[in-house]
Image 1 (cartoon, rainbow, N blue to C red):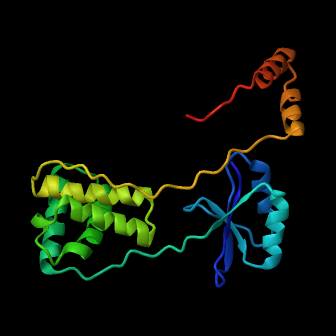
Image 2 (image 1 turned 90 degrees about the horizontal axis):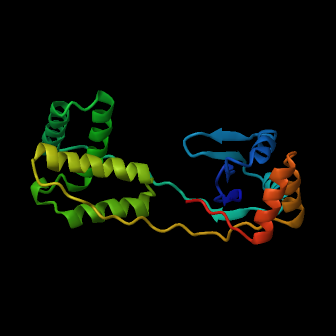
Image 3 (image 1 turned 90 degrees about the vertical axis):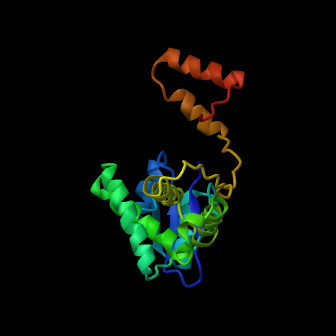
Length: 222
């Protein structure tokens, strides 16, 4: 995998960078840069957004990197719930308590279900159908760029309300996330291949690597 530099917006204060876990030398190098910062939730590094820093990153990656557009995250709006919506939220909580869900899980489910209620609280929730729910979640994916984890938590909360609180039949929601662009796999240079073959001290191990390389075998992640 290659490092990714996310093209910052003009007003952005920082340049975000993704460095694959295995590229520890690059991670150590970016740690040494002035203003470097690690964002644990996003699994990204960043530096202050200046032309100098952008050029420094390009030099650090030595041409072996990708540039992608930065995605501006749009927070999911919060709304004031109606009395009926609050009653639905209470019914969900009661159902989860009876199912012996943990306090932390109930907190997450209530938070996610509140997002759902913000969209549908003016309707009779029993009349909200599968197509309505799938369209709602897909809209959040496209407009608010919610993560796959957020999507799953939201769907689980909705299912919990309809299946546990309202005792309705179990439902499966088929929501296709936008496909990510697939990059062309990296190709090692001759010097890199030579370094790999020569790295083992054991002669048998070297012979195995030579055999694999000469036979043209290809390894793929499953």
